[in-house]
Length: 114
Length: 115
Image 1 (cartoon, one colour):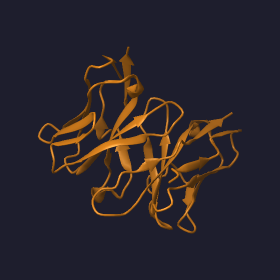
Image 2 (cartoon, chains in turn orange, purple):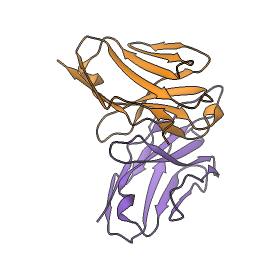
Image 3 (cartoon, rainbow over the protein chains, first blue to last red):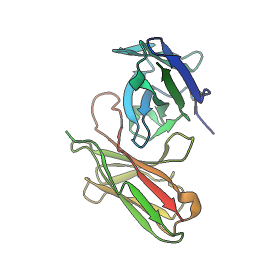
Image 4 (cartoon, rainbow over the protein chains, first blue to last red):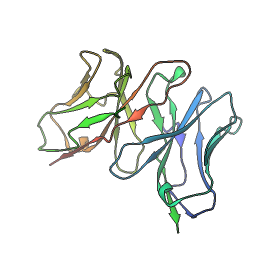
């Protein structure tokens, strides 16, 4: 039973434009969310996180938005660059405080077109 | 500051054999996690340690799976009597305790192939 869902297996965006990756969750007790980026043959790399007490967190070209009433978060990448082509995973801790393991979505493969 | 290190990177073995993977976390991280990832899925949480204490192991996939972290530094994941369905990427992650939420940092994984 997937508690974190990424419903778009892939997304193609032109270089320089905005990439928007979406994630929905079912457990209203989640208090922290993370985005990871994964290149082939490498482990996931932490990108950005957001606490449930915030609705936005920004780090350079990456911004995560959280809509608690809709149980939805999104990752915005502006401007998109060729090196952003990767699989992006949304994740949340299985229990409070972040000490437990993470539950992940299935990922969205982002392809940046030149 | 080196990242999480996993060995071996690839393991090919025959069905029924035992396999052991090693994970060396980031040096100041006292929490260590094991995950399994299969094709088209996100990582699936298996177990975690805080220092040498295994605080969660109910999500280990069967009693053929076990993990240790004897001195609170490196960890091993063992799979006994391997089966075809065990073929997957096994990922290790580590994090530190501290104020607020601390992200987990992953190694590059061990890819297991069962013949």
